[in-house]
Image 1: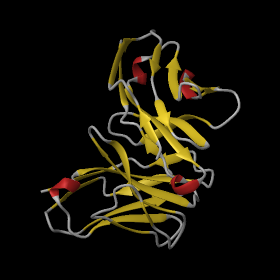
Image 2: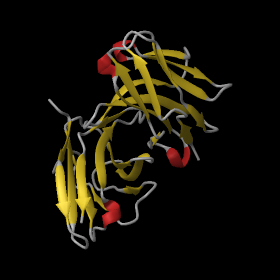
Image 3: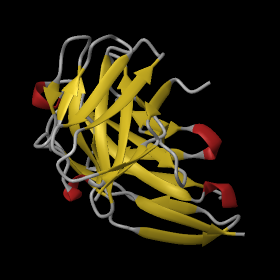
Image 4: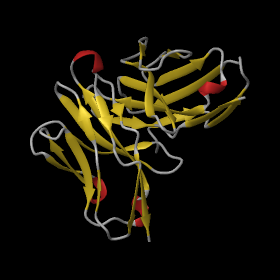
Length: 112
Length: 116
């Protein structure tokens, strides 16, 4: 069964609204990551975490917050969603070797 | 700063053909190089990786990749493709030292289309 799951799979939000994307992993990995995927940009790292209670800024953190309340869960929060945040968001987990990551199925977010 | 370049945005071949997907990187330290595959509407799946040792590494489903330090390359190859290999392929680099520890940097991806 899938080791990294994301919810919701699809989301329509309004500009200025709050959006929370959730990720759960059963790999018992310390590290978790949030990426967004846009045509022409590949995958870009938004936030990541080395373990429960930690969050780190990735390459494009502006407009996003992250929360890692437990080993298994990692959330991405858009406090004030904007149309430029329309994208596909992927969560991933990885072990301390850090050379292999395991991805969830993605969340398609549309901000109107 | 580590960067990854995949020079071909699209590659189209016929079933049974061989294929090479190109990846070049820039980074001065010790790095991991890897390839991931993404089927339409799905998340990325790990294919193979290189860190040290034999520069040719084998992955799943007949894929292999060859590391070249002199060319700063890590090209992915398959001798005989199947239509189910149609997907987007991402090259990625990561490091276990410095500010980039634990972070993957991806190329923009190469769309492989295999005609039956």
